[in-house]
Amino acid sequence: MIAPQRVNVDGRTRTLTLEWDDTHAQTLAHALLRAECPCAACRRVKLGGKQNVHVPHDVAVIDVQPMGYGVQIAFSDGHAQGIYPWAFLRTLDAHEEAEKRPA
Image (tube, rainbow, N blue to C red; front, side, top):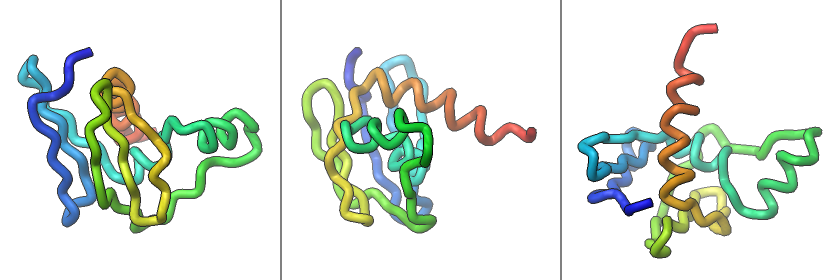
């Protein structure tokens, strides 16, 4: 998957916006990104089925580093192991929309 044209971190709204080539703009909450971290430690917690990844309510993205096929994101809670591939980030758009819908 091709990288977005632009990546913007908004500390005030705690969102990460990705602007893709197909003119689609995707805005993801920092808390969602932290909860969906694809690193081995977070995946182990999720696969264990007994608990969710702990995400502080005020978690924020403090750094984003390009990694070619995605980005490495560092969070205010000290977590910085996850590398988020572009294709994975694109799928989070649908996940976040589903969470916004009333039950």
